[in-house]
Image (cartoon, rainbow, N blue to C red; front, top):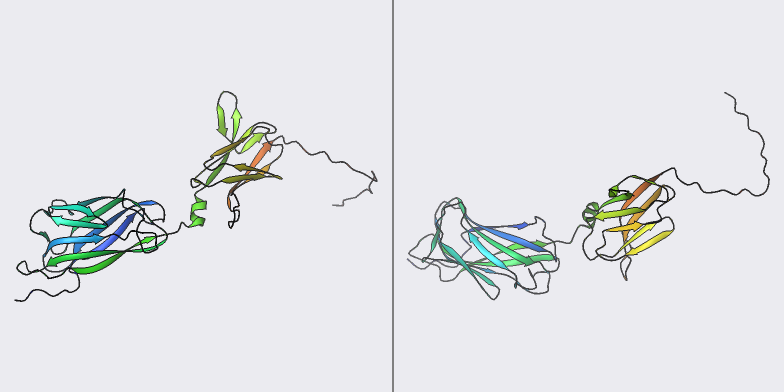
Length: 277
């Protein structure tokens, strides 16, 4: 019998990421599950996973410096006896023995990649070179090649903004700061927020005032307090080429608000109005 010719791959490869939506610029974990969905046991000598490294949209990451890899036999107890080694940008999955068996109809191998900081948005093409056969007496002259895709997504800003929580606190003697939806007029009030991505400079707007906040700030105390019900707006800071973007708003009520004094000039009398009914 002649050696098997190079053909399509014999195994099936599925990719999942943690988090499920992998974001560009964030660290993610990638799992490649290797399955044998055929009716015949598959013998495998080697799998080579090529990781595209570089600054482009089709690259997975700009560096593999912090990458760790692990191969897990699944289901538990599968005797694959595999090891991994990273050579340049290639991840090698090798058997301890001459080859390992992937049993028909079972998911038998999971390749986990951790510590990967994903590159710019786009789809990374991970190339897999598979040296496998259905007949242990005859191995292919060359590895079969296939690719899997890993999406690197832009953050959905509307979803990200929806995660921002914004609340008010007032100073309670003996209890420090306490959450409140209503505060006393002229007493210190503190605005707090959570869920804003790190490194974003913010602004707090209310009335005709606005306060610029440093990146990483999570609260701002207004020691003079407020006199009337006030709406606070938390926004990003406008930069060159980037407009200010609202993140969250909050209306804080005031007990016994201070009413503004009105001055009437001109006539001080008005015709009497009679209401019937």
